[in-house]
Amino acid sequence: MSDDLEIDLDDLERRMEGAMNSLRVELASLRTGRASGNMLEPIQVEAYGQMTPINQLGTVNVPEPRLVVINVWDKGMVGKVEKAIRESGLGINPQLNGTLIMLPIPELNEQRRKELTKVAGSYAENAKVSIRNVRRDGMDKIKKAKTAGMPEDEQKMYADEVQALTDKMIAAVDKTLETKQAEIMQV
Image 1 (tube, rainbow, N blue to C red):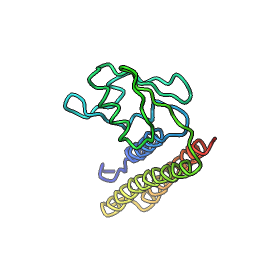
Image 2 (cartoon, helix red, strand yellow; image 1 turned 90 degrees about the vertical axis):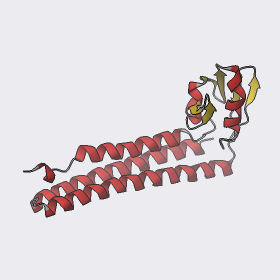
Image 3 (spheres, helix red, strand yellow; image 1 turned 120 degrees about the vertical axis):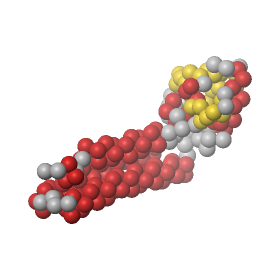
């Protein structure tokens, strides 16, 4: 059989896993009322002429369940890091103490928890769309292979495998979302 007729299921799975990993990163950045260094990952600071993640400008620690402390290495960057946190939309008010930036994590009220579950849901929906796009690409390759002469039973086998992989990934997205929403709603 020619290489044109081979459907690379590993590539499709890798691309779907990429969507899952992206979802995990987005969900980790959502605030749940419990302090986590991960919530600062998406924040970029203008430093030394380029956008830089906070964890490359200082040490991020979580000494208490409701407190994140950033020890900024360069005194000149403290103000920029503080400004980036204020403008990030996390709803956290940084407190300065020399080169230390303390981020007390306030309790989430019921309304904010519901908003965050909706945001988590939209992240999950975006991941599902990405997975379905990968599925569509796989099905398109199967159709091209059909015109190139792939036997019908192989087409069916590949289509079933692509669909099974898609179903497995969508279920994983749903489970991840359910876990995160439960974590957000937990008081």
